[in-house]
Image (cartoon, rainbow, N blue to C red):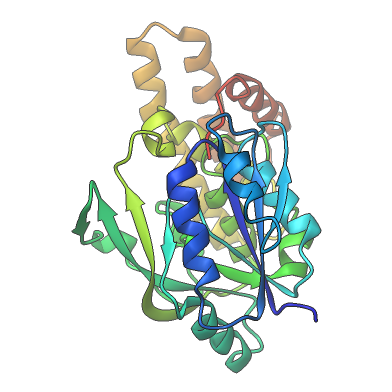
Amino acid sequence: MTPEVSVIIPAYNRCAMLLEAIDSVLTQSTPAFELIVIDDGSTDGTSDQLERLAETIRIERTDHRGPAAARNRGAAIARAPLVAFLDSDDLWSPAKLERQLAFMRDNPGCAISQTNEIWIRNGRRVNPGHRHRKRAGDIFIDSLRTCLIAMSSVMMRTDLFRSSGGFDEHLAAAEDYDLWLRILIDHEAGLLDEPLVTHRAGHPNQLSATTPALDRFRILALTKLLADDRLSPARRTAVVEVPAGKCGIYARGLRRRGKIEKVRLYERVADQARGWLMRAVPEIGCAVESMRSMLGEIPHEC
């Protein structure tokens, strides 16, 4: 029987947390799913632990290429019409899939939805700030400054994921921010306003703790977005304001550290972003490739 949803977990050197995440999927109140775990070249014994579950879940082991590539691989082999992602350090409540599948059935025009979350940091529950508050509908402009879709809460049409091109594998961070913005150009986000995901932060190998200056990746995502001809004039104006500001802040930090060549690149990107508003930036593609080249040496973490 074809499952209703394919659940994809990328895994890299988080064996204990991964097993907890897997258990939170296997104890779901609905059996209408397949679980795909992509072991992204772990070296901490993850593969041995996964082997014990081989009859229950689908497992693939790949060379270490980062979470974007791992999720893309999982989506490529997914059999269900819907995909849901779970980070290996997060957990689902037992009713997560059942409730969200019902939401998607009740809203057939919805191509992407999410649930609410409980945030745990360093073992203690915390309240997210107002800017992180989830909402439904057209959230494109609000999502430019803050990523408003949470990876472990999202469920989306598999054909939408594939037609969007999936996650940008050149991005070691903010690959979710990049994809959601591309999708939100054309699609509203659905929200099941129930806290059905536990987001765990504060542990030593959390991506945001191991990848410095995350704004570099957000700037690249926004610069790519400026070349998208689906943007309306109003949305293009909104997009321009964000990378121009982020580039200026980041360039000042680089200047203090004496990284003048990189300063010039980010100052040029800021100027070109403003030029895109006037439809006159022939070098934006070169700027994107220059940033990709600089960021290519950043190590990947899941």
